[in-house]
Length: 336
Length: 98
Image (cartoon, rainbow over all chains, first blue to last red; front, side, top):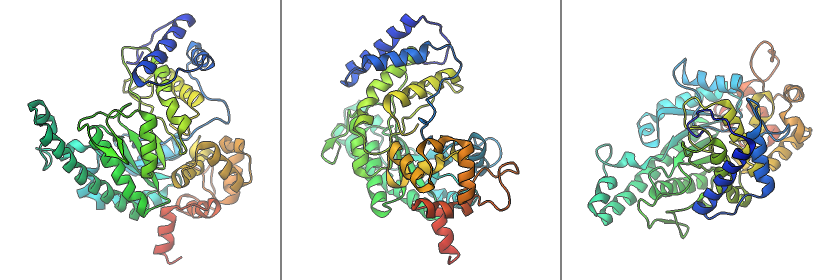
């Protein structure tokens, strides 16, 4: 199930779950249905009694991440080395435990020194990650009126103005940290959970990416989305003439590509009350128009509540591997 | 893909620096290394290729000798072999006037 609990179903029940998940996506995101062959492949994956499922030999994809290691044992560089040399991930990511750009800014010299030392010891690409996290700029944590307090009072214009002001602060902070990491030798920057505070949050990420890309044409820039569609907390913000509120993954990807990202990470939320088969079918149906239209690498966000992976801190490997394999097989992903 | 066990890190670099989708990135890396794309996820085949071309491996006594390029040493070779930007290798050359 989407909460990680184990259920047993017949093949017919699994097929019904898959078809229901597809229909849920079609109704909500206004996308095309999966084909019968794709539905059949999903049913095959979920009807297997094996503990683990995997793609065919030669179909392996790249693994990126939103931070590696728990930071609970050893140093952060030890975490990176463990993921490189024991877990053998394709990339690793250094992160500050307060995973947002704003709190990183005052400690950037410390982060730079850690990145610099990590780069001497690592072979695989090591990027730096944090969230745009627009809410950090509102009172009492920041200088800007809190739009979540203004909106219920009907003070719409003030709430919108506050978000627009926060965008400017966030862009400056993201670019500042990215520049610092470029100087320290990082292989790229990851703007993770973009859009978490809505359309203004996504706009801040896009504008920051545009500025970073203009200065560094060959540097890695990754964006991972916060959810399947962009919340309209402001409602009128646009990027490149496109209204951001309500955008689904394919439209998000086109704007991210326009801004200059290297890798786009769509996120589809998990319904914990539905089966993993239902959630994976819904995820694949929503994301397929994105991967079909992409001219840049797509790394689906897969883990703890997104991409069909159960919302649990210790998700069962049968569920994680099925969700991952299904997404790679059906969406022709470039990575996870 | 398996990271240092295979060629996952090299393929990832093509995605990050050149925005290549996976088939293009695998074909590019395979071409530069003189192997087939299928070899890229084979740890046995890649251990030989990585050693011969100095592209780094897992730094243990079972997998590396003192004659093998590791970490920042390997990244200088990766930058040259793949023809891509590797910021830490660029910095090393800048700072050592290399």
